[in-house]
Length: 378
Length: 212
Image (cartoon, rainbow over all chains, first blue to last red; front, top):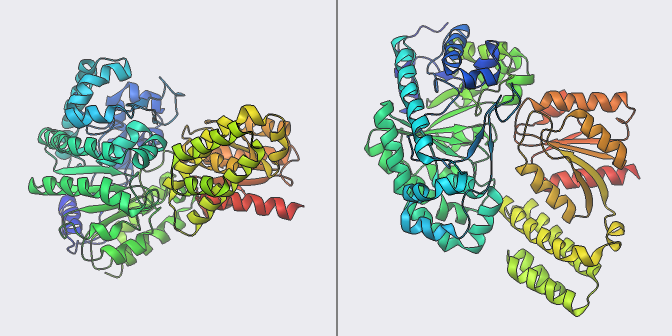
């Protein structure tokens, strides 16, 4: 074991600030994994959130602990009645899916091309106040009450974690504006919109951006955890040309970052898909204030070359390695990450996106133990 | 017609492409000739994607244009169409454990544009469904696309059943989707893996060419 001279939180903060931590900070993004590991079905977890929370805590202990728990349970904390993400329909195990299936999103068209004008005149929040019931056939007030309860629960669970010395990472999750619009229209329809009615899309986005920021700030005011988990996967160079990124993703992301940093909130870019082409833009953000969280699709070693000395990188032990690999494969890859991406600081060892439900326990343990024992070539 | 239609495809002008095709149908142009022009244009889109000139969004857009034109041509093509789909037959699905279909649908659209006949098994497809479809269609190609790791188990089961049924040797198994990798390909025993729709088509074409 490497002698520890920092607390978990200090270690993570040092990595984000591009300073040298006592050892590499480590945290798997666990959501469904603890449920299966502790012998529950995913359906049981969604029906009994107390048991799901306990499974998360127990799994944290079984793994010997790690630096931060990304979140406390299977649900995401959200503000009651306001949407920081596209209001997609979540398919819940045991209710909409098989008892032990993974919770998944039912991606459908939530608003039509004609609605862009309404969004442009109303903004994101007021549009959904008017449109949610018609779109979903459900009451927004009822949904708001459920969301409010979950947010209160999140605060309680977070407090329990922190009383036990386990810091929790996530203050609020927010879609980038492009991500939310794409999820609301579906990738295909949104892409057609970008080519056929780009001005309408932009006007609607212009009118919505501040609502996303406000909703996130309000959520963080309640969770009192100054980190915004910004979900991005639809705006990358894996999908769109840079001129589309420059017009429909980048300006709003800049507004997010300015607003969050001015409130002392860390922007955490959850960058699923390949962002290699776009990463040079991220160097324009203030040095040592944000995190680029990579899922294994972007080449993390090339990302390091681009972001070295500018932005902390988080990643990227791949799902296939954790599921099908052997502990020695995982250990070898983690040491490579610590040596190459950790060199000079600014690195958090995490799973590439979510820790898979069927990851081998010994593989996840190996990932955590490698960070605790391997100093690397700092 | 050919040059204008090609320009509409490559310029991402859906309405222009649709209007041109409607006009050609009205003029009595052979629908198969129109389809051939569209396929050539789609192949050009694919080439530009491979060289980095076009992005996934252009594949998605032109795929939608192609689908729209196909719908227009469908009633006038009828019997002639079967002979046109000479490129190959593919059974395609998202394996059990996953309901994502975005990547699968993009690849299927491109495959059809390239002249493949694709039998789409939808999402969350159990192994038996893949085997039954392969037997029914005598397809030499099986494609599976996934975004979640529980599908690895299904992929292994499918390949194991192919062996049991004596179909493994004559079936080319290709996998794709964000969660797959060369490592997954080896572990589940597939023949090929890619995240790139056009590469998927090339791999399938190569298999069919080598099989002859």
